[in-house]
Length: 67
Image (cartoon, rainbow, N blue to C red; front, side, top):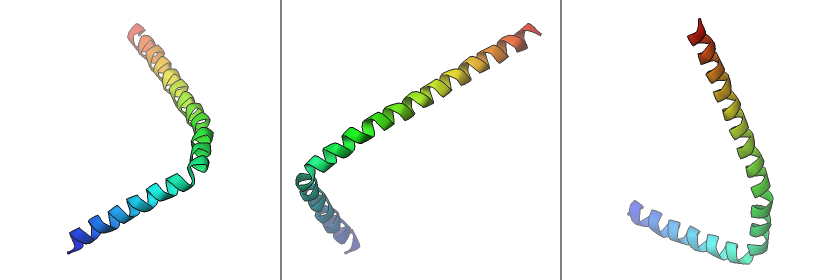
């Protein structure tokens, strides 16, 4: 009986989510618009850090090979 109950509760939650999304569509879009620039900033920072780390590793490997 627990499996059926979880399916029913899941369906109710999905339905409530869809109703809420329809009711608050403008606010949802505003949140998406506000979060995209932040995600781009963090993603770019992570890419820069990864690139710098790779350059440092490459330089360390060159120095090690030159010894």
